[in-house]
Length: 175
Image (cartoon, rainbow, N blue to C red; front, side, top):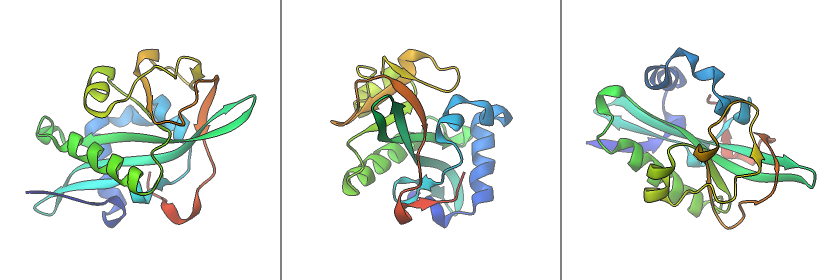
């Protein structure tokens, strides 16, 4: 049986190994890593999927911002969602997303969420769209239709996505 637990209860080395397994060694060159910067993830929104004591999936959420002429708009970036290849297709990623979104609502951090992902999947199951992201820029290559957001405070303005300063004790130093 799969249990979802706070990610900060899992050895960070195991999380890194999972991320390498799910995304490969070139993952640090992805635009999402540049957007997140070196800030810590938001512990209250980051979870692990564990089966019989073994890490099989994880999700991390990050404090980022859309930085434009009018200042900085805080956002929460969901992802990466990582699932061990042998367990992909088992619904673990969907369970992790649901748990992170529920936690975001509980923590009142669900007003402006974003991610980079498949619009059909994240739109159908989680109501993410590209409706308000058309003028956003990213510090690296990104397929525009994969830049998705949801929440009533998602800005429909231009700007560059990037890291923001850590927010209180909600953060953890995990990568």
